[in-house]
Length: 241
Image 1 (tube, rainbow, N blue to C red):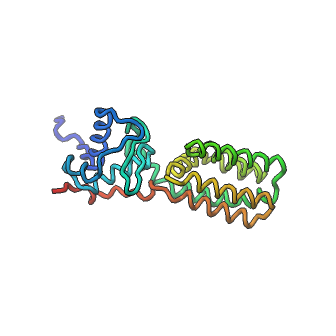
Image 2: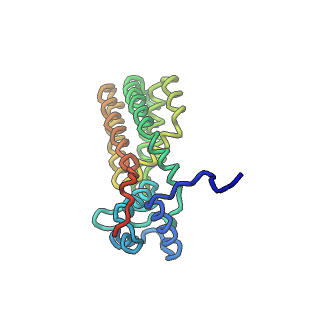
Image 3: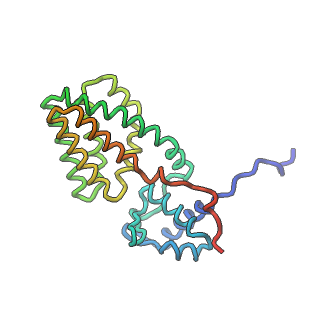
């Protein structure tokens, strides 16, 4: 049978081609952490594509934690390479993220409420230790990811609900993804740290309603991630001519 009519592969979208060019540019130029990429307008002109396609590529790199976009100040490398997960994997994470965040809000709001009712002195000590660990990470310029993980684990333990804890374990991998997506955003680690303190204060004071409300506010902040704002609309992938 002729091979001429074999299934065709889809042409990569322009922003995906821009990603490939940017990865090659960083590698060939020897750029490292803290170095700045050319402005979007210049990249669009040099690559012969629209600024929309360049912006889409930059958003992909940003949500992957590979670049930092400083409003009015340009785009800077976080690491010495732009190699990361394929765009297809990124889109799959984007697809499932809303369900994960919805589950987090339902479960963790109830866990915070129960923690305020049931916490022990040992639970409070674990919560404070996790908060201190996150504060140290943030002071050192990190994202506070391990401290965040410890804090939410301590809230779960303080609720003393085996069934809810099992539910949390069942989505642990997806929660880790949402944590990483959230805490990589500029300013988010310090804001999360402050929200954790509010949650702890309510649990310490044995105020279930306030603890639940504080946790709900926190998880809704976590839900505001760039990955969910990314919309790889094919209409954006038009050449600039």
